[in-house]
Each structure stands twice: as C-alpha cells, then as structure tokens.
Image (cartoon, rainbow, N blue to C red):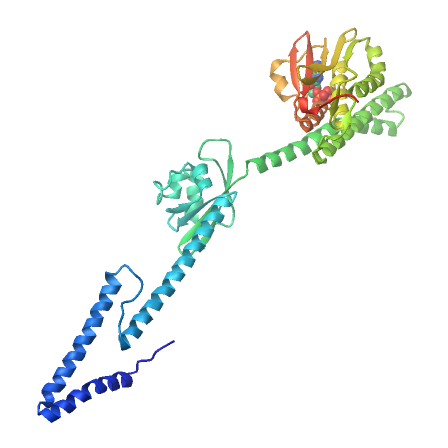
Length: 434
Ligand code: ADP
C-alpha cells in the first residue's frame, strides 16, 4: 500500500496539532507562547523518530523497523520494504553467481575471468591445474605473466580475438591447449582453454594415414602403369617379357587387394561396438581351420610345425577378431622364417590365463623396432616392394583384435635366433566345455 504525503496533508496535520494549543492560548491570554510550545513539541517528536531512524539504520542489527506511530510508521515501513527488496535481489544475484560458478566448474574447459588489462579476477579449478595457479594467492596477477609465450603476449595485446590461439601447456607437459578470449562484460574478458591434444593427435594420424595409403598404392600403380605403357607398342615389350609382366602385375594387384581387405577389416573392427562377450569361441577348432588353410605354405618352405592345442580351452569373445589375431601371427611366423625352420604354436592354460603363442626360428627383430611393430604400415624392412610382400597392417589388426578382448600383444625376439609373439586372455573370459 502506498501512502502519499503531500505538502497539503503534512500542513493540515500540523495545523490540527497546533489548533488546540492556539485555542487554549487564546483563552488563557498566552497565544504565541502556546503556539511556540506546540511547535517545539512537534519538532521534538519528529527529532525523536529521526533519531530512532538513524539508530535503526546504522546501529541496529535487525532489519525490522522500530515501532513508531503515524507518519513515521509509514516512513519506517517504506524503508523496510526497500531494504527487503534489495536483500531479495542480492540473494537472487548470489544464487545466480553460485550457479554460474558451478556451471563453470562443471565445464570440461578451463575458464578465467580477466579484467581488460589482463588481471585475473576469477578462475575455475581446471584453469588452476592447466596453468599452475595458486588460488587465491595468484588473484590479480597479469595473464601474460602466467602464460609467458611471447606470441600470446602479442595476441593478447593486439586485442583481436576472432581466431583461437594454440600453445603448449605452460606446465611443461605434453598437452596442447587452444585458448579463446571473448568479451564478458564491458570491462571484463572470458578466457577459455581447451585441451586439444587428442584432437591434434587424431588430425596428425588422419594425415599420416592418407599419406601412407597413397604411398603404399604408388609403388604397385607405378609398376602396373609402366607395363601397360610398354604393352601399348609390341616393340617396347618383347613377347618373352610378357609372362614376367603379367606375373608382376598380378603380384602387385594381389598386394593392393590384400591391403584394401586389411584396411576394410581394420575399419570394421574400429566401428564395431564393444562386444559383451556372450559368444563362446572354440579356439581349438579355429586354430585347426587356420592350420589347414596354411598347410601349403608350410610345405612350400619345408617348415616344421610343432602345435600344442588344448581343444577344450574355449573362451568368451569375438570369433572373427580372434581368428584375425591368430592367423596374422601365424602368417608372419611363416613369412619371416627361412625354409627348413620350425614354428611352435601353443594354445593352453598358463595359471588362470589362456595363452596363445607362436615361436619361430626366423631372423628375429632388432630391439628398437619392437615397440613400433603394431603401428599401421610399420615394417622393419623399409623396402615396400620387398619379397615378403607385407603391407605393415597385420600386427595393427592383431593389436585391435586383442584390445577388444582387453589384452595386448607381447613380443620377445633375438636377432638370428627367432621371435615369439603371444597374448593372454583373462580368467573371466575362459569358458568351461559343456
Ligand atoms: P607385414 O605385412 O609387413 O608383415 P605386420 O604388421 O604383420 O606387417 O608386421 C610388421 C613388421 O614386423 C613386419 O614388416 C616384419 O618386419 C616384423 N615381423 C612381424 N612378425 C615377425 C616375425 N615373426 N619375425 C620377424 N619379423 C616379424
């Protein structure tokens, strides 16, 4: 309820107060004395409530106004209501600020509120971790003192923040950070830092992959193109060379076909959802099938096979992937073992684990190559057109297939003596035969 105290109303009240005194004064013959007395009382009365108002506003701890009659009660009420409204507004603002801070903490990015001159006003936890801030001790320091890269100083001082700024983590770890600065309020800026290490790594991998595939395809295509040009005119390709041309071209076509098939398999494996291991794989039967398919390769090179397969050792998993892992390891063993060598294959229990291992008497692999063997297109023998005709994709397929079964490939090798590749499946994946 609003109360309007017009000058007229105030004057009317004063008149109503003075009139009785004037009347008594007129009767008693002390007219002016009586009027003065009434005005002095009115003044005192108002000073008393002015004093109370002052005490309430500056000394009292309570928000409730003191009791007052008449006009002063309305004034106290008016002030009280204004104070309450301000208090409610302040609370709402505090809640809003709290929510903003909670949201900023929950963000996966580091954020900082800066003054226009670069002084840090506020940061979330992640920013303190990324930039090694001690909070609140570092409050107010210059952002360019924190991020000491001269390029960032230039970028910040220029004040054009349309493009993001990328820098290596000032903490000295391998993280790559992408910074974005935007206007937050009239004299404040918001700095957001995002960890883009993984993104950049993926970008590099994609570029490397495209470069590698193009490089791999270049050799066979050049060979085939050369022969096709020669076939154009019979003078350039004598009939006795035709057999060799057809043989070479078919070899290169097979290599390309193999590579495309392996790439397709890899991409299929990557896109497959994680299995929940509800399918039982009879690994013994899978291995027998692989060995049957590879029998001609063994006989061609006169390689002796020593196979120890536990036919009752079944596991929960993905048959296609286990097949791919075992057959690639066995193919490599045959490929890299000279004629008359020996390959020992084992599928058996080792403690609570199921272990698959292939050992050969090949040339072995130098120590420094071993950690990189499962990288795509990585080959110890750099000659892409080597006699083995390898693509460098076999072991990355193995790695993928094993990651799916929550395990990894292990290798031990000695130059001139041979290599052993093996992996172990966890006891939870073992299944008892019916
Ligand atoms: P590739 O198609 O070239 O065989 P892989 O990914 O299967 O590709 O193998 C990567 C490299 O690891 C091969 O180029 C080869 O140099 C080496 N390698 C793999 N298995 C063996 C092995 N049993 N003995 C010796 N070297 C091996």
